[in-house]
Amino acid sequence: MSLRNVNLAKIHIAKAQLGLDDDAYRALLGRVAGVRSAKELGPRQVAQVLAEFQRLGWKPESKQQGRATPKVPQNRQVVLKKITALLASATRPWSYADAMAKHMFQRERVEWLDDSQLYRLMQALIIDRSRHEQQ
Image (tube, rainbow, N blue to C red; front, side, top):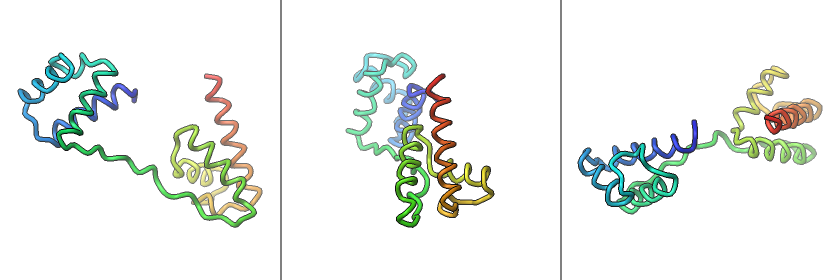
């Protein structure tokens, strides 16, 4: 889903949560951005409309990115920090790494991997990163 589509979805969610009827919504779009439809909004106008919704009391809900960083022994912290960075750079949650652990080693969670498996998981994420950088 593109950033534009995500922002347009936020606009429609805010409209619903603020309880705006169609006339009030279109009036707000006209007043803030000079348009009658969200489809006509440019990137700067989208930001202005979202800011106006927040001024009117809408609070965007942030998505939980999954679970917390796994707890592993001190000797595995360096590898775990690298895995954390790789997941963050690819904007993937920890559930992605857990799914890889299950697929690669039949372990449900990253923290259940031994040293060798944890290192190989990190290598797989590095390979994944290099594949996506080439595209």
